[in-house]
Length: 570
Image (tube, rainbow, N blue to C red):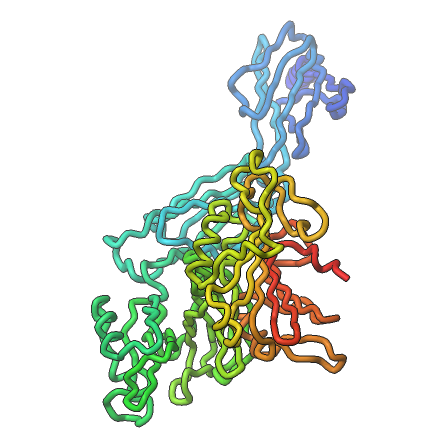
C-alpha cells in the first residue's frame, strides 16, 4: 500500500460524520452522510422548518457553531452531538441561501442552507387602476393581493408631487399626492403619472391623475328674462369675453350680431365656451337655457366629470328620455333652497345644441323645487324641502318659517295638528304632526298646481311603530326632525292620466322631470304611483327616498318619506 493511499484513508476516517434525523413535529429527516471536504447543502421549503443533524466525527474531540456567520433568518445551535438548523418562513418570491460554519479543534467546514421562495401572486384587491385626485393634498392606500414581501414600486419619471410608502405587513401601497398650488407650473391643467408595481413575475400599472384648478367652469345661473347686456356685464367681471367667432356658425351663418345663441369664454380645461340662449324679437332676453360646450372635436373625460360633480356635492340622477339633442350620458342634481341644479352630459360628437353646432356638451339647468304648472303641463317637479328630511337641525320652527315663506300658515283646526303629550320628555318635539293651509285659500282653490294642504310628521323615540308613524325614525339623534311630509295640490290632469285598466299613471313629461332629480318609477299599480331614488329599494339599510303620487277627482297628493314600509300597503 503506497504512502499516498494511506494518507487519504486516514483523512477519510478522521472526517467521517454520520447524519441522522431526530423526529419532531416540524423536523424533516435527513439521511446520514459523511462530512466531506466540500460543503453539504440542506434545502428547505418556503415554510418555517427545522432540521437536526447528528455529527459523529471520529478523531475530533469537540466542535462548535460559528455565530454571526449565517443570515438572520437562520438559527443554528449545538445540542450535544447534534446540529440544529432552523429557518423562518420565506415570504419573498426569490430563493435565498446562507452558510452555517462548524469549527473543529483541527479546522472548520460549512453547510450550505437553501430555502425556496413562494410562487409570487400579485394583484389589486379591487379594480381601481385609474386614480383621480383633487388639487388638495391627498393620500390613498392601494390594497394588494400578494404572498410575497419583495414587490417593488417605480414611479415613472419620479415626479416630485408623488410620494409612496410600502407596507408589506398589510400588503398595502400608500400613495401621497402633494397639493396642486396655483404657483405650480401649468396649474390650470391636469398632471399625470404612472406607478408600476412588480413582483418580478407580475406587473401592475396605476394611472395617476391630479386635476388642475379649473376643469368645468360653472356658468352663471341668471333669472329667466335677464338682459343680454347684464349677462355680458357679469361674465366680464370674471374676465370672460364674448366669443363672436364661435357665434358665426349660427343663423344667419357667417354674420356678426346678436343671435339666439351667445358664446362666452370659459376657464375650464375641458370647456370651450359657455353658451347662453336668448329669446324675444331682438334676442335680448335670457330664456334660462345654458350649455357648456366641449373643446372643438373633443369629448369630456367621464371620470374627471364624475369626480368634479362629487366634489361639488352633486348626486347621480337618471337620464331623461332621449331628446332631439341626442342620448344623455349622465345626469347629476344638487338640491338647495328653492332650486335644484341639474347637469345633463351629452358626451357624443353627434349630439348637438343646434343643428349647426354638433359635439359634446353639458346642459345646465336651474329648476324650481316648487310645483309649477303652465297650460295644464307640469314644468317643475315638486321636491320642496325634501332634502331637509331627517335633518336634526331642521325642526318644527324651521318648518313653520319655510312654509310661511311659501304662503302657508299653521292650520290649528286641522285634525293633523297634534301636540306632543310627552313634551317634558322630548322638549324638541312640540308637535307629533303639524298641518298647514294657504294664507289665501281662495286664490289657491282657483290656481292649478297651488298647494291646498301640507302635513308634516316628526321623528321622536317613542313614535308608534304602527299606522302612519311607521314611517318615522325612533333614533334619538333625529328627534324633532320631520320624517314624512304630505302635500295636496289643486288639479290632477297635469300630473296623472289613466291606463287601460282605469288606474292612475304618471304622465310621461312628469316622469322626465322626476328623472332629472334622480327619481324613477318603482311601481304604477292599483292607483299607487311610487317614485324612488337611491339603491336597491328592498335593502332597508341603504339610504333612499320615496314619493307616492295619488290622484283624486280634482287634486293630486304627493307623499314624501325615507322608508320602504309603504310598499307593503294594500
